[in-house]
Image (cartoon, rainbow, N blue to C red; front, side):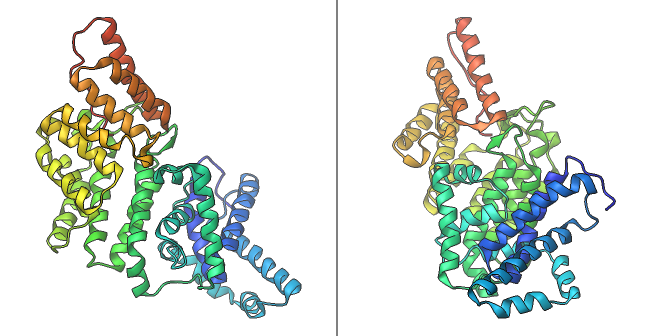
Length: 429
């Protein structure tokens, strides 16, 4: 025990949790119990590491503690119900070298495919995986799915019960099973990256650990399936988006919108890699959701200045996206592009189509975009109203501060009796 305890230990435990869970769940083939055992190991680490120091092999330490917990449970089951004898015997007699070999593996990608279990619906599998692999809270997952937190908690609980009741082993999938589960896996990686790039809750705009882990896992998925154009498209999307990370916040972590960013701070190497990946993926002829989103990101990244952005091309890409994979958020982004090409009134007209969509009820982004477009048409009073509504609905402090700043700026203009709002900063965060 040589390493001192410090604040980064919480990030270390968050990073290790899915890797430890992957090993324990694969060895014992009981996901729900394995998750409980890993949680107990994490609690033990929080109690012991501040006093004893971080172990030289923290991952191995957590695997051993969680495995002991699972072994005790198996023994208890044997004593109480006289079953699973073979499993217990295997656990008790597993050679130390085999255990060390398991500890040396990175099971996160394996766990990702395992969680996308055939006993689950796609939405349940994605929710469970975000919890197990991404380390997202129930509230963060609920925000990604646009549902109440209580609904998401029930969905995750039912997912665990479904896996247990199905009798289908919780094991490493075959290559064919990986291909079948790939759409759900890509969706999970996409959501993990989004939460890392723009955190939905808390004082920080970005969670770099999540964004980087999503990129790392997507790279591994591409190694597993190198000819899949959508895997390449998703990795390209992440790189093209992450390339702007250095310019997204100011010295006080305040949000800087896309059209106000210093593009000299963008990571051109990362953006170049993303464009190269996207070009190769598009050449395969089959264009999917992630390739189209990556193409939008590429158009933004290739503009030397915000005013040079090719908005007609972005509008055309969103019109194609609406056909390939319609969703409320695609419609919102399509409305922004339409406003930039055809004027804000057109954008507001498209947004009205979402007013009765329950999936966006209470979501801040609809009000934020509407406020921006109302400001562009000169309706300052309504713009202020919707900026404030949007601020009250987001749980991200940087986004909340940004939206309230926009409202305050317009209120000050009104006080000065300016005749027109004019153009504002884009809420395309």
